[in-house]
Length: 249
Image (cartoon, rainbow, N blue to C red; front, side, top):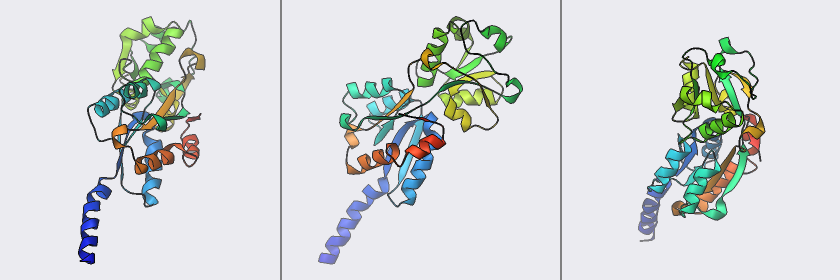
């Protein structure tokens, strides 16, 4: 009888173990989180899945009931969006890292660009040239790009020539394929994309600080999710952040 009871308990627990944990994370965190995820699995802590996309898309999916255990956003606004709706465990929210906003180009356009008021952006882009960035209406990197261009007095020129991408990685792909001569992305994404070069860094005071808040999704709160949050944002993660070029906060 005791053996049968143990078997029944093991069988009932199996689906929970198989389900594992799921992290919804900004596309710009892909390489760094995949490395940390590999360490989690290698330590025998269980199955772990990532869904990478624009923070706006992921936040709305969580709002609609998607099975996410953690949310790791690319700006405070989309974490606030879920927080106001009571969808994240507020006491778990933390802000471990930041980034830099840069102008990127293919090697044939590798001449440095001074990102300052007075830049002749139209001449830089050339006839019909576009500048790739995340869509400012939905993508944090695009919103930072718009704010920086507005501060520098360049937005009126840039807006009609903006190639609006679904996320920062899609913006990079447009530059890689030569569909846009320049792109505005995070510095860490360029480091993970061989063949593209940073040609200018936007002044830190041209846009709000770039930050990546993380929190446990309230509907999935529990010891396992909180342990994973510690793994992805605590002291074990900090050397990985630095290796991938993120700014520690």
